[in-house]
Image (cartoon, rainbow, N blue to C red; front, side, top):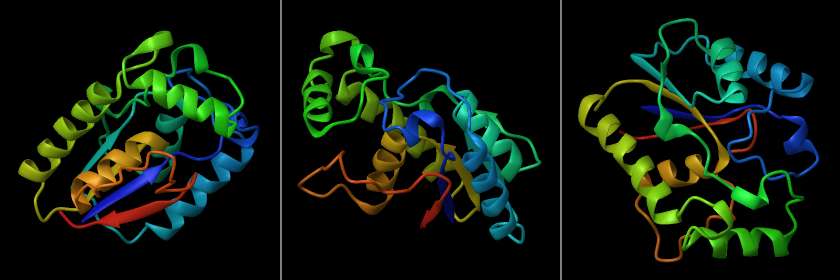
Length: 173
C-alpha cells in the first residue's frame, strides 16, 4: 500500500501564496498536523519512506517516520518561477498553468514535471510492489502520483486537490 501524504500547513498555504520551490517551514498548525497524522499511522509498518528534500516536507516526514528516509529530488514541488509567492487567485493559477506548458516566466514545464514524478512512480511500482511505502511531498506531486497509480483521466485537472495539507491517502501498488 502506498501512503501518499502532503506536508502540513505553512504560512504561505494559510495565506494562499504559490509556494513552489521556495523553502518555507511548517507553521504551528502544520507541526500539529504532523503529530496527529503520526498518531493515526502509528500502527502501520512501513517498508520504505520517501520525501521531498524541501524543508516543509522534511519537517513533516521526520515527525511521521522515525526510520531511514530517502530524500528524492523528483518529489520537489513544481517550479513556479515568477509566480512564486503570488496570491493563488483563479487568474494567477490559470496564467501559471499556461506558462508551465512551455516553461515561460521561469516555470518548470509541465511535461518535465510529470515525467520526473512518473519516473519516481515507476521505481515505486517496480521495487516496492505489495510493500507499505510512505511518500511525503507537495500538492502538485500528489496529483501526479495519484493519477499515475489510479490511471490518468481524460480531463487531467491540476487544479483539483487530491490531498489536503497534513493528510494522507492510500493507493494500491
